[in-house]
Length: 398
Image (cartoon, rainbow, N blue to C red; front, side, top):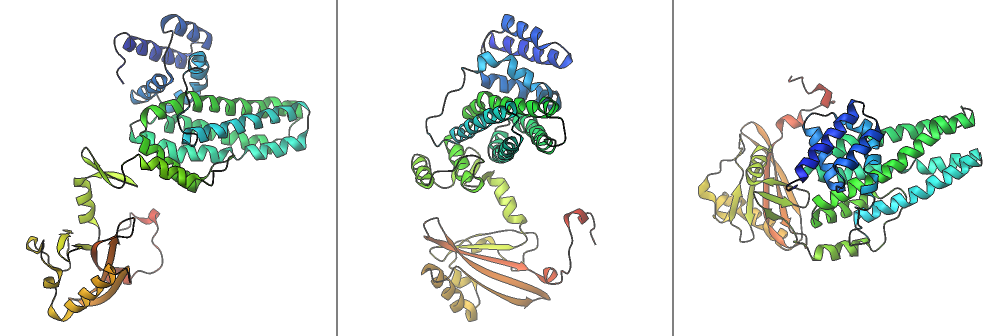
């Protein structure tokens, strides 16, 4: 982000304030210095500063330890910085709906504590325990996308705070019948409420605005798609979600695309060099025949089973097989084109090896035939496997 003239100086002042907080400056001194020397700043800029501190060597634990102070310090500025995204079903709005439910639950918990209604309090705490799902969805869906943009702060700092709350939640439930009630409220319940409430503030005033600045429309749609599998803790996704996703995607580019040096797929992206290395590293030989029955591609794995030369590219597939097997190969391709089969496999002994050969029909999302993929693998060693060899034993090369 371009801070412009003057803003870079503000950034350094804020970074120094945070460092001085870590060194022991009181929150009140820090707040006074901030208001005097800085004045105003956006939530996204604050998040960027914390990320820069991590990059410069300030430990995530230090920032986590003082992030409540940071939030309090910047509260008056942050409270006006967040704006709702346009779509009601935007993932940020879904997270905010979750937070509204959590806020109401916290109020009920406070009331039950005031009334010393232990059974109701137990019921409400068990309901609040579902906040683990809320945090898990945030950590597993939102954080990975931020990391792709080089924004590691939330993963390192906020995830740690989430885990602190998870621990406090367990303690609050376990100690409900073990501690004197007033002491319990002071030592276990109130700190939990304060931390949960503080996390809502951090999400809505730091995490979500920063995410809205960084992530693309397609990334938000991808996140929304994945919520169908993860669900949420306190809200139900609408029955019309699939239709909404379809409408969102109607305005976005469909299918794989080229983005600079990367090929972007639905489930990730890679460079052409990375893709070629993957295809050549897979422990199988791959040959692709297009819709016109011509060889279009073959992989160059280290130990190919059947010889392939570049001269085969563009050759009709029936000319690439011995006469006695041509009819069978063409029959398989015909099955694939007519959508009568999706795969065919067979196995042979070849030069002392046991070879597994499989043909797959390639189709696009609409079921249109794109070609045939031949995958050949030496499974001699696989056939001999017995028992187990776990990941922990990977150092054993025997």
